[in-house]
Length: 430
Image (cartoon, rainbow, N blue to C red):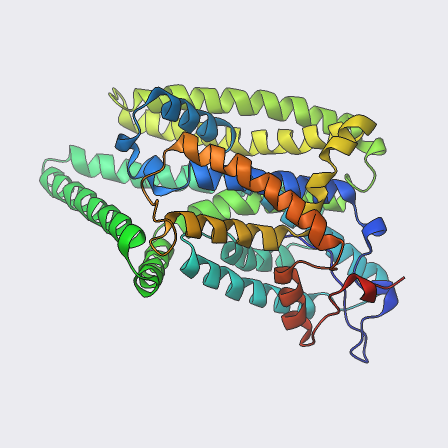
């Protein structure tokens, strides 16, 4: 999760000029956007990313669940993780700029932070069933390599990375279709497809059985195997480099241009992002929906599959950026700023709240909790998210009255610096 951080002086103490950012010095819109992204991630995970949405969708045929699933897929899935990715890249730019202005060494400290984040992410995946932190830790190394690039170069690289997913899909699908059309390999392709389908079905049934009835040890072992299976797939290439990293770069671009540090000067640009992003996003996602439904009885399977993927590649990040622009513009109005201000508390504790969401979901769905894995529909999941997130906001507001950091942020800082960081509000620098 993006964070503004301090660097130790040569004596090992936190120097006042580069110590933890005081609340009055924070860029409030960033915390509000992080809080908003947290809600979207929770909504996606509780209503769409859980197994019944894409592994056991046949169980949820009711109109209410189908409508909920469609709305979440259209407006939420993939958009808020991209918003977090954008904020991560933007946070990187702010940290880099702050270190450069103070003449401090940035790379060694940042690499240590990434190593700790990677360990947290791996542990999170084992306890839960999904994680984005490990991908952030790995991809942030690439940000270090591109940190001196010009803003225009960042946009070019981001656009090129966006094409990775569609390009890979086009090659893989094209080769598959050519083999299936060849009489010499057609039967082999049919057998391979049937075998993959059988393996996927068996794995999904095992996941349902283990998570709903297994012990902590069994679930953790299954998650470890799932993680290895995930790493051996094409997702680290297509999702990490083609989905997350381009938005990292857009965040770095926004940070380099200081767009959210000087909003009044960039209002015309932000309005353009809102309307262009909203237009392209709605068009891309709507067209993706139409094309995807055509896949149920395809006349041109190769073309429709590629078109659907390309439309998603355009629509999802466009909607993500339009959301960020809309919240930014709303915060410029005093009334909306007061309404959205509580999100900043959740955003200041973004890492802790992200992990807390997984803890709550584990207690709800795993066998050693309420054991509802595979038994809750998309609509019920959405309702749960709407109940959980206000509690997170209240808990965050209470926590920040007493402590400087969230528990996960405190652990991250302490491990990075090799020294326990001051935690209580009373220890905050004046």
